[in-house]
Image (cartoon, rainbow, N blue to C red; front, side, top):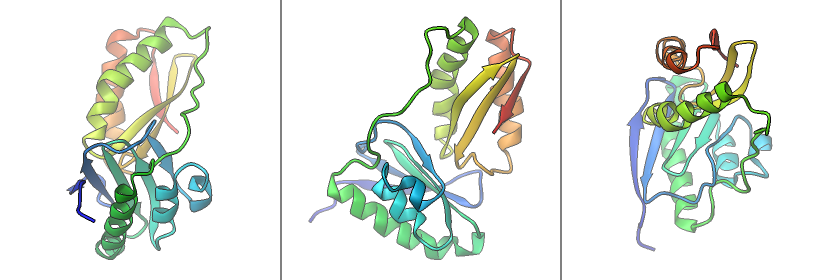
Length: 185
């Protein structure tokens, strides 16, 4: 079988995470993050296989890349070879890397502030952090506090606090006067 997918390995700001960018894009209905094989079992055969590798602690799957984090930086070179083989096998199969649809908690009563936050996150912030192999997910907005989950290379990254405060919080406060603070879950 000839290779139809080009895979590039890219470093991320998180030293324990590598980003495997690929072209053309894969069948992924939504970015999905997983931390255990059991959690991934019904939603992503790829993530389940990657998380079954010794030392892999987190997998973020998107249409354009997969970020893989390890618990011990010394294991990264060994794990890298296994990750690359597993990713190639799944991409060559042509099967979706993530199954189903994303469950979103959108409500008809969503406030204008929440709509603005989601728009800025989706249009500006998420694409920017994707370059570094990460993702940021809206969890909830209450009493002026925005709760986000940092996924992929952003989860556990030494610079994630800086990204959150100086990037995300500062940008959102320009358009959302009700926002007082951004908190990572």
